[in-house]
Image 1: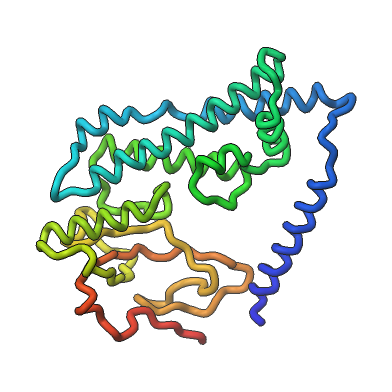
Image 2 (image 1 turned 135 degrees about the vertical axis):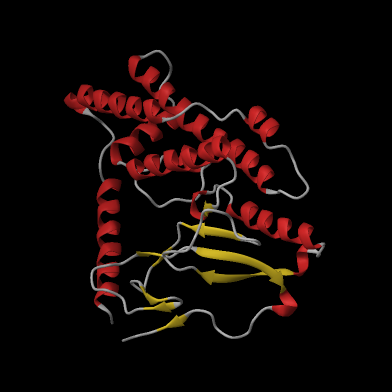
Length: 270
């Protein structure tokens, strides 16, 4: 078995051990409750300060109206609405937590769960009920959320990007459908007859303009192969490197009847 597989196994066992330890941790603060309240107030205040204002979806809809030949307009506005629900949930729960610490509102079970998650560096279940899937700890999750919000704001301010951060969407299926829909309407093809072909792009690929058809996407990772020796060829996994960035990919819609049967991605174990 590859040494990286042993590392992954050990990490899983370690995470399980620490999770079990946290379950045995008492919720009572004792004499240190004051310190706990200060930590909760400081952490929650820091997150609230980082969160931008909710997106103005009405202004975005005026700037990017529903268009027959540009489904990405609808994708953008819908994504903004989904993230507004999430950011409002995060913001309001932390504001109410601060009020509960000061005794201004009742510390409900929901807020206690948020406080416990913040202290343990985990994502509160209340947030996850409104969130995209994530396995990150709370600090990394907040940074990731802000990056996603920035991606959408840049899209709204600067126009449809030439390269899409595919892992930054809340509902990635909407983006994939939008790419298919643009192609189907451009060539008057039923969308249910389309599939995707994928072309791994070179590092020096020109992204100053979007592709003629489909979309350039980045933000994907590979778990086992460490890198790419040359275009479309994976190299052997590098020891102690568990994940590597996938090169930019062009998603190219095409009719299922014309889908190529030969492999596009070759694996080289040297």
